[in-house]
Length: 206
Image 1 (cartoon, rainbow, N blue to C red):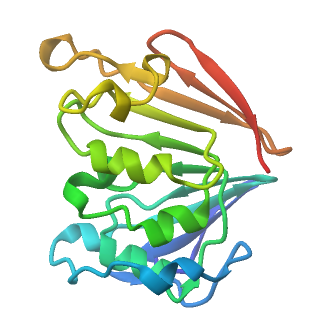
Image 2 (cartoon, rainbow, N blue to C red; image 1 turned 135 degrees about the vertical axis):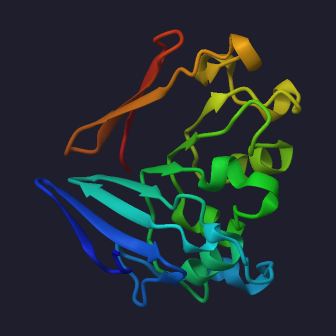
C-alpha cells in the first residue's frame, strides 16, 4: 500500500501521494505554506467510512499540475489545508467525492487555497454535485472553468455550469456515459474537451 509522500513511477511525470489509508503528507509540497483561510474554517467530526482512507495524489507535468483526492472527506481535507496549505496551488482539480457529495467533502479552506484554474466534477445526474457545491467552486479565486460529467438535475441552471461544458445532459437510460478529456503539455497549456459535443477550451497554467 502506498503511503503519503510516496512517488509513483511514471516517466516524465511526477506523481506524489498526498493521502492514503487515513493519513496525509506531513510537510508542504508544491510551494505550500500558511493558509489564512483556516482562521474561520469549519471543522467536521472525523469520518468513519472508507472514504476517509482515499488515496489522493498531486501530478506535475512541467508547468501543469493536477490534484485528485478521490473521495477524501472533509476532516482529511482540513488536515491538508490547516494550519498550513500542504498542496500549494494547482492548475486542474477533480472535485472530490463526486462533487462534494452530501457535504462530506469540499472544505473551502482547501478548495479555495489550492486555487485551481479549472475544475472537473465527476458527478452523476443525481449523485454528488449540488447547489451548495457549485457555490463553493464558483467562489474559487480566479477560477476559469468548471466542467461537469453530468447535469445536476436537482439544481437549477444557475447552479450548473454552461451546457456546452457538461458531458451528459440526460439521466437513466438516456445517459450515454460520455466523458471529459484533458490533454496537457509541459509548457502548462492544456485543453479540456467535452465528448458529447466536442466543445473544447484551451487554458494556460498561471
